[in-house]
Length: 271
Ligand SMILES: C[S@@+](CC[C@H](N)C(=O)[O-])C[C@H]1O[C@@H](n2cnc3c(N)ncnc32)[C@H](O)[C@@H]1O
Image (tube, rainbow, N blue to C red; front, side, top):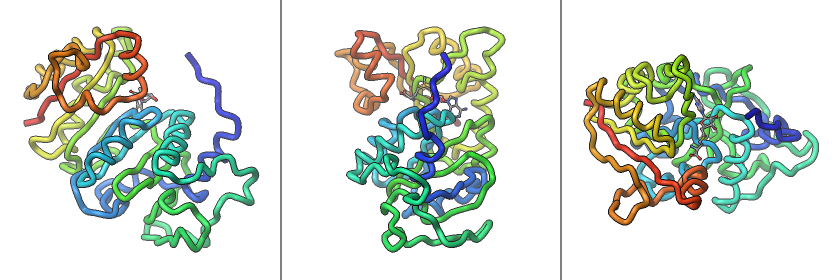
């Protein structure tokens, strides 16, 4: 179903990056520039409204978490939620561009340090390192170890160098139920081979879904690609399951679980 566009979406999104577009592809191989500490980088692909990413970043301050979302409405909701979660003020209700913080200059390709306090930008809601782009895709730095990128990722290799990622989360990925759409599923072997390239050897993928068809398909793909299955359950929130992942719910997961639906979950390792 096509979502109705949020009114003033583009202006509202701009508030979170100081009005500057930052191309996620420009950070390929240098994602560490975006985060305060050089520590293992985890990716959530298709983060929706971002609850899972914020909770993981909170629970694991020794990890950097990048959450990518292709849908601009969902991205705005994720940024608004993060603003509330981290006690920042939700600046997207500002009216008119005069209230949108403007930055004095951009040094293309280079580093651009922003003193967020002096510029009147809510600190923590603009990247400390910025790269110019003319595209709509954008990166938003939220806390020292959490960032969002608004981009519909077609190939992970477009954004990440070999071995750049430590781990990957796929939560309630779109099922693409028709057979001829199978290659669009984020657990299709085409994607899995890409993940293998950008994950360090031994890196893990954690996958959750409510969709039985997608789960069975994914398990088959994992096996075909020789991934090691570390954790597996067909009822993540059932009484017999104690996997850590049950403690970090996504928005979809909350909705389906509270409706009594079982959640399929699996953790696999790339060898
Ligand atoms: C069904 S929603 C689930 C959202 C969230 N993970 C949750 O569990 O609440 C799937 C999301 O993944 C996003 N998505 C799917 N493929 C993507 C891609 N290749 N790049 C970025 N986002 C993607 C969609 O835009 C959608 O918001």
